[in-house]
Length: 230
Image (tube, rainbow, N blue to C red; front, top):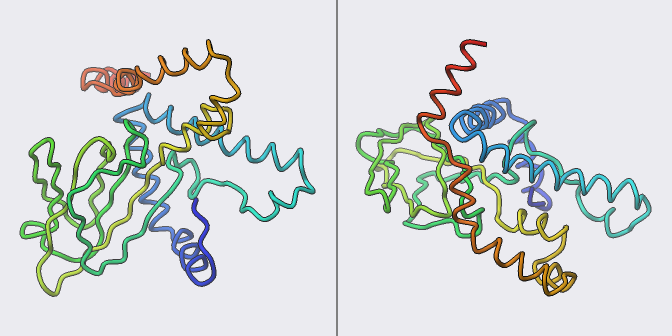
């Protein structure tokens, strides 16, 4: 969670304590775990590892002034697989075409639309690479690989309001954990030539690896049926 100072910090803390946002986060989390269970476990596992490492550092270095100055890492909401969230207060939130290149390349983020607007006349979600324009009513949530797919939303009508609530994880978190809690360059510096070569070869296969974490419709059907039987 990014640390904000002064009034902004207090306002965001108050928002995150609202039951409404906890419920949206819980719904998003369960939808993620349902439709992409392997990817959910992957993203959730890295966040668990990151927080556990922070807690271990604090236990082993209780007098560290550097750690005392930093806010303790924690999940924004219980069991959320995402490391960060953004509230866009609008009041006429519109995003131009973009991809969130800072996020995990194959990871999913959660986008929720809020406000009061006629979703048949504006506020549509546009997924450019897929050539889709989707009606997106207030209260709707969608899970998308926001780094890989260009997306935007249509303007709403005059006098209406639209806000957004997004949950996501930066790709840097995964690189930090993979490099033994170091920056990439420091991680490479600590490797032998053989280890660095193996690491670079592994990274070259990241796209293929990421796709193995996605689930097919048949897999989801099989999972649902197995749960129903049990």
